[in-house]
Each structure stands twice: as C-alpha cells, then as structure tokens.
Image 1 (cartoon, rainbow, N blue to C red):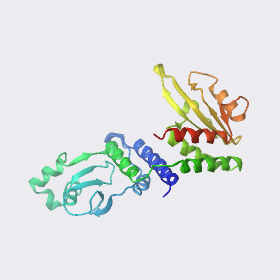
Image 2 (cartoon, rainbow, N blue to C red; image 1 turned 135 degrees about the vertical axis):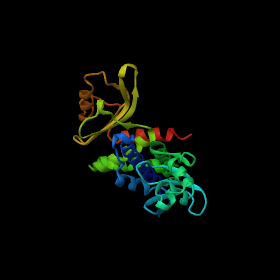
Image 3 (cartoon, one colour; image 1 turned 120 degrees about the vertical axis):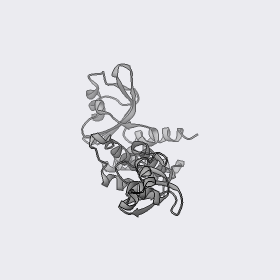
Image 4 (cartoon, rainbow, N blue to C red; image 1 turned 90 degrees about the vertical axis):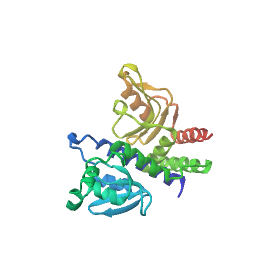
Length: 262
C-alpha cells in the first residue's frame, strides 16, 4: 500500500477518534458512543474479533489464557485477563452470580482493568496507526504535489482538497478554528493560543471553492484583528498579494515536507 493511501487512512482514523471522543462522557451525561462510527474505527483495528454470550470482544492474542481484551460497549474497557473471566464480570449467568467468589469479581474488576473510555480510545488509535507504514520518499511527496497541481489547473476541487489535506497532515497544520473559518474555504495553518484568550494562525493556506484559488500567507493573523476575515477574503480573491499562490503553493509545501526528513 502506498504512502498516500496509508496517510489517508491515518487521517480517517484520527477523524473517527475525534468523533468518538466527543461522545464520551460520565454516566450521568447520558452520552452514548455512536456504534456506527465505532464500527468504522474498528475496521482498522488488528486484534481478533470474537463474540461471547452477548459481548463483542477484541483479543490481542486469540487463544486460551490471559491477554488484552477490549469490550465493545460504551465504556470501551480494556482488560488483561481471559475471555472466560470477562464473560463472568460483564455478562454473568444467574448460577455464576450466586457464587460469593464470583460476586466479588463482578462487583470489583479493578484487578484486571487496564483502561476505560478516553484512555482506551487513545490505545485503540495508537494501535490502528501503528499498523500503517508512514515512511515516505521524495517520489511520494512529489506525487502528492503533482496531483494537487494538476487538480488545481484542471478545475478538480476534490483533488486539490485531498492533496492539501495530506500536506497539512505532514506539516502539522490544523483546520482553521471558528475564529478564522470562512464558508466554502478550506483553511489550514499553525494555530497558537496566546495569553489573554488570543488565538493566532499562520503560516496558513487557503483553498477557495468560491474562486478556485490556492494561496499561502507566511505572516500570522490574530483573533483580535477585526479585519481578519476581510484579509482572508482578499487573499483568496487575489485582491492582496500572498506569499505564494496557485501551483507554487504545492511546490512550497513539497519543499517544507522534504525538509522535515532528518
């Protein structure tokens, strides 16, 4: 599988994790994890899937004995024990519950629990991404830049958006927060939080679906600048000079990406 395909998978894994993280809350919150989104994430998870009683489990090592076991429920508990022990603690039979020793295990599982909820989600994310080969060559980066330039020149916005998203991931650029977002514009940049509630973004890249333009601005913008939206609109429309524009933006990102290679 190519570097581009693996990087797209990483971006999708991160997106799914963010969605699930937003749905995790304390019991009293009433929040429930979206099972559809969770199923999409687990498609990337390499552990063995097994159904036991009414439980859906993922086992790090499929076989008898103790292993790490993820239970697919709203708690996302990861245990280090056996499948039989998880069944006892999570889905006991009446016969099992009347046994005093079993009852103690059912009421207190701290001895076998590794993590729950957000902590387990981080583990899942790390394992999924760990399956991907994210090493790249000059040829890989050249290909992404070439695809982006061709898409821009041929009026194919989806291709521009994909290449831009890939370079943003490589360069650690994040989507613009609400303080800098514009409808029908994809904006990525280095976002910083300053004392006193100020947010800055820059350097930044803007792809305008309105004007079909791609621009790069080196100097940062501040959330305290009341004219920041006018500046962004003027950049995307070509009314003010950008640090780089058009296909040259992909050349610039290609150079920056290769500079990250030690």
